[in-house]
Structures are given as C-alpha cells and as structure tokens.
Amino acid sequence: MLHYGHANSTQADPTAVAPYLFWMMFRNVASDGLIFDDPVNAGITSRPGCVLASPSWENSGAPVAQDYVYHWTRDAAIVATELGRAYSSGLLPDAGPLTDYVTFSQACQQSPGDFDRASFFIDGTQRPWTNQSDGPALQTIALLDLYPHLDAPAQAIARQLIGANLSFLQGACQGQTYNLWEEEYGASFFARSVQVRCFETVAANPFGIGVPDWLPGAVSWLTNALDGHWNGQYYTSVLPVPAGDRSPYDPNIDVIMAAVYGAESPSDPRLLATAARLRDQWASPDSKYCYPVNTADAGRGIGPLLGRYPGDRYDGDNGTQAGDHPWALATANFAELYYRLAAELQASGTRRPDPLSDPFYAQVGVTESTSVPDAVTALRSAGDAMLRAVLYHSDHFELSEQFDAVTGFEKSVSNLSWSYAAYLSAVRARPAA
Image 1 (tube, helix red, strand yellow):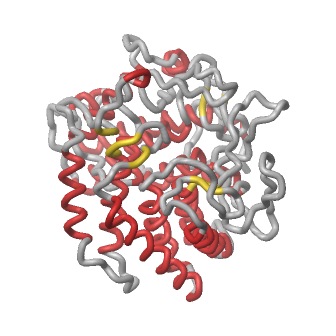
Image 2: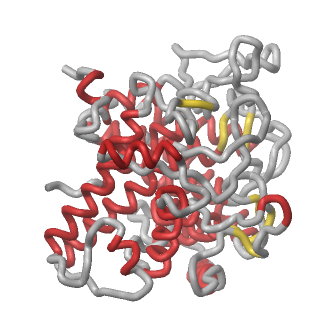
Image 3: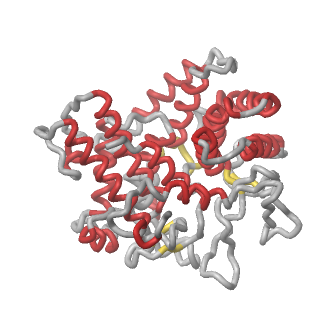
C-alpha cells in the first residue's frame, strides 16, 4: 500500500511511486470511454489516442492563464513511449491505448496544413501554432518502440506514418525550426539530436521497415552540425544565439534533454560541462539565478530543482511573465542524466577523468580517486535527491508544469502529462543498487 506521507517525505524511494504516477498520466489519454470536451472551442471533442498536454485552461476559477487542452506531437510521443513500456511490463493490461495513439497520429498527419505543426486540437485537426521538426522525429521513435506490440493493421499505419515522417525530415533536417520551448527560431540542438536518434533507430530497426539510402549522410551532417553548438564552455541550444530580451538563453536545459530523448551520450564531456553550469545556475548560492527553494531543500537533503534557462520569464499562471521557476520535467530529465551516466559507468567499470567533466562529477562528490562503484552510488543518489524534491513539492503526487522558485508550491498548469512521463523515464533509467 502506498502512503502519501511516506512517499512525500525527504527519504522516499523514488521508484515506489512510479506505477501510481503512470495512472496519473494516463488520465490525460483519451479513449472511447474517456472523452474530453474542448473548453475553449465549442463542439470539439476528443478522439481516442489524443494526449492532453494538461487538463488546465484559462478560466475565472483558476489563476492559470494558459490553455493546454491540446495534443502536442512531441509531448504525446514521449507519453506514448511510457504507454508502450507500461504495456510490455504488464502494468497496462491491453494494447488498446497504443493502437489509439497510432490511429490518432494518422488523423493528425492527414489534417490539412503544415506537416510539422506542433500542436493539434483534440479531434486531430491542426490549430494555429508553431512548426517544430522535433515532433516527426520523436513520433517516429515512439512508433518504433510501440511497433512489436501493435496488431497488423496498426503496424501498417505505423509504417505509413514513419515513411511520411522520414520523407519530411529528409528535407527539413538541415533547416531551421522553432525550438523546444516554442520561442526561438533557428538551428535547434534538441531538434538536431532527436533527428539523429530517429535516423539511427530507423537504420537499426528489426521490423523490415525500409531504410532510405540518404540516412547515413543525414546522420553525418547532423553530427557535424551539433559540434558547431559548442562554444568552448557549453553547448548553445539555438543558433544563432538568441539576443535581446531573452539573452542569456544559455545554458539551456534542452541540451540535457537531448541526452534523454536524443542521441547525445550521457558521458560526453561537453554535455557534462554544460550540465555542471546548469546545476550551478540554479543551485549555487553565489548565482544570481539561484532558486531560494533550492537553498531550503539543500538543508532537507533533497534537490536541486531545475528550470529551463537563465532569466526565463514564462510564469504560466496569470500572464505576468514573472518567472523564472523550476520545472518538474526539467528536474526529472536531469536526474535521468545522472542515472544514465551511472549505468554506463557500472557497465564499463571505468571512468576517464576530463577537465570538462570534472566539475560535473565534483558537484556530487566524485573525484579522480573515487572508485567506480562509489561513483555509481554518488550519481544514483544525486538523481534520487532530485526526484525526491519533485515528490516532496508535489500536490499529493499530482505534477504540474512548474514549482514556485521561492515557496516550492506547484504552479502553472496542473497535471502536465510530460511531467509524469519524464519522471517515469528517469525511474526506468535508474541503475539497480
């Protein structure tokens, strides 16, 4: 039996609550028996397989000034991956939600408009929004993950979707896009990295899905392009580097997210150098961006909570643009970086010190003299501390988009699907003690 008072404590086992969080996320997945109404656009109802980003919408009864009752291609693909893992583990009793996701994705892809539209109404029609080329890549990765669990008709649809996504990405992968946060237009580190992972996953697929002959060249081009984001100190998230009122835009958490959803290696010294700066940015008392809640949480032995980028102004509540605040999904993704790196060290049995990555390891007490088993334990404990902070500040396990940077209370849109999916992904990556 799960007791909230224990799981919400600073000593909670971050893995124990994962099945419960899955069902919290699952409430946002439409089906024949769970139908949503669009609260803003009258007459629009959900089709099975639609994934609500969140059930929050702007109304007089809540302080939230955002409408999230829509289906984002990226968010839905990340959730679909967790649906597939839950089905393969036996937590999800049947594959119906997987098939629903595939058929809804087909409806979205066939909806008239731009191929890479990032967001859709809950009936599968396009809504006015930005275009983002990370979506088709992440959707392809999710479809390949679900593929062995689908019946023959759903597999046929999945192959069609994958083929169309690849045809689009062939021409789009060397171009520009709106970035992960839907704010800046340019060459996105995150989008490029998930495209590399998409192409590599397609090339390695065991299902007989055809591999285009242009794929190796695209991977090579993107890999070289990703190197161009290194500025000598950290990876920049968008090129050209954003200027003006959003500067500085880096270090940006979407670079770390590229190691979770994209092709970046968790042991890349340049990635770890970026990660070290990100953690210091919001956890070091000497940083002007330090979250007060992290100072308090350090005394509790949990955290830190992480945000998106320095000086982020998106608040999510009343439109005052009074950020910046930590995000549940950003914190969970950073915890997953710790777990993935720990698992890699555990498997290899060796660690090569590097001037670029040494500050990252030093943050969790790992030095050149630390043994590999002790380094694995330290990294795993660091990830646990972050997930415990997410649980500690949750509202009875419900995960919103953000936490208040001062009080730690949840804010912005409630029950964000991606927050749950990020937590679940991190737990799956956690190496055994």
